[in-house]
Length: 418
Image 1 (tube, helix red, strand yellow):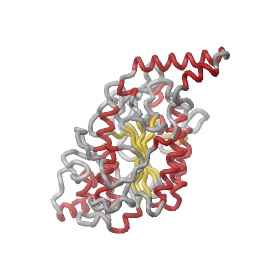
Image 2 (tube, rainbow, N blue to C red):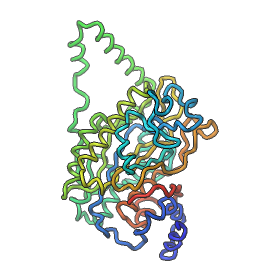
Image 3 (cartoon, rainbow, N blue to C red):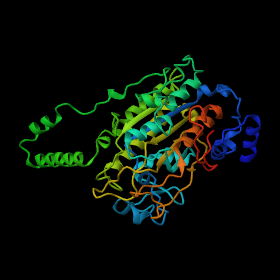
Image 4 (cartoon, rainbow, N blue to C red):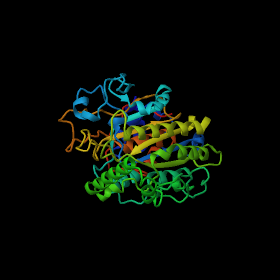
């Protein structure tokens, strides 16, 4: 049926060379109402919300959704691997291959409600270990990353008719200029949340100068920070891109949710948070990353709750610039990798499942440096939301928002949005 539908589209208008793979990936059921020529404003698309949660630093998808059903998982992950599924130190089983990190258990509600799709091995068109370059590619969808037009900003222009007339109904929440890239946006500055406290180091010295134990702990923390600064590149040290820490995400998501739930509020949003560049002491069941996964999951549930009935018209895309290496490094962390994870959740997602092929963790499938191979293009994942959820015409997405001279790897038909 997918091929039949694709042939209809070919007959209506000559398709660009890569469109057939996109259509195959989106699934026939999701394409029933978006043949070329359909108006972008048809069927009340103005009620639809699209939220992008951008996780700066590079999320370790193998930690969030550990592939415990892969025979090579335990051997490759070593001390960063979780134990047996559904055991005390193991992940929560949600699939024949993949589990869910216990710290992220709040996400189970979306899985059980059939409102979460996961692409477990996905990346942008340009493999790179540079945070800045990878973010630029993610924001523009362009291999050369030279464009100043972010795909979400271009989406905003299409939904508003390109004349800025729908600022109140087509906007953006947060401060991500490259991803936004448009003029008709509603700004919201996350800097209202407290960041580094000026003079904190001196104040700690004064407060604990008579406490030998605390003085020793503070000294160890400073020593570790100094060591990390000496081994990490400037690109890694600035991987957060000035975004608020994920620990602030719950409050951030609540404020954004209130804006999005308003009848006159924005319909598009990007929430940018930091904390996923885990080069050292990442932890497994517990530890630094586990706490951040918990904060992320709590924030996503708060966003859903705050949106209330609007949640049924919402798709949230959780994206990161790249994944982490499969094997741990000498500092018991993970380094910048290639294949990562992308998540689509919300009332606009039809069914729970894992989308796209899984390359496996055997030695011969890993990329140099033990990076996970990515067999899915993150732009196809995003395009599914723009076409199937926001009802943008295919020709406006492929060849408009995203370039038409690239080959979009297809997703399985299980990736279906309402």
